[in-house]
Image 1: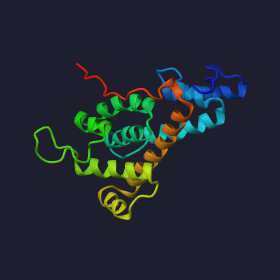
Image 2 (image 1 turned 120 degrees about the horizontal axis):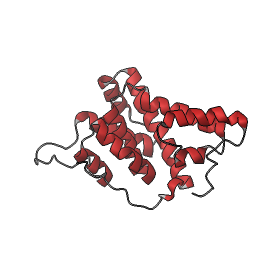
Image 3 (image 1 turned 30 degrees about the horizontal axis):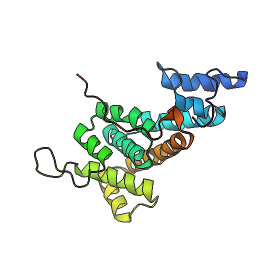
Image 4 (image 1 turned 90 degrees about the vertical axis):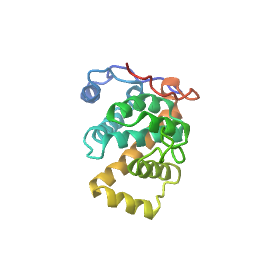
Length: 195
């Protein structure tokens, strides 16, 4: 990492509850490198953990689509650590391996299904991927796409998609700028097929 990781234990007694909250969110795992990068400022780490925890666990937006969006943010921003962490979660949530692979390859727009028939991605996946790309690369999102999203999902779910993509853009930019886990420049790979 471009700066040292923060200590794994709080240096001030007042920071102990923050460490405890972050550890509780990660349980049963220990603090991860991202936490240790953020803990240079425990108040920021606490707010980050609260926001991202809510995005990941309190959203009504379909998890497989949210994770597909997160993985596409990682690809667009070259955030290897983010991809490595979320690609297996996306598959476990129900994202299709072939679709996730096409996101990694950058071929999701034109790739056909394995049967050679219709397009590979569903209409829902296409809307989510298009939104993710526009929001990540341009910030502004076309009105027509927003209308399609609003016609498909509730206002709350549209907001949840927007905050998921925005939040994980924040994460990927932090990870890449500081080279958390020394992953910059490494190859993004599809997760192994579970037996």
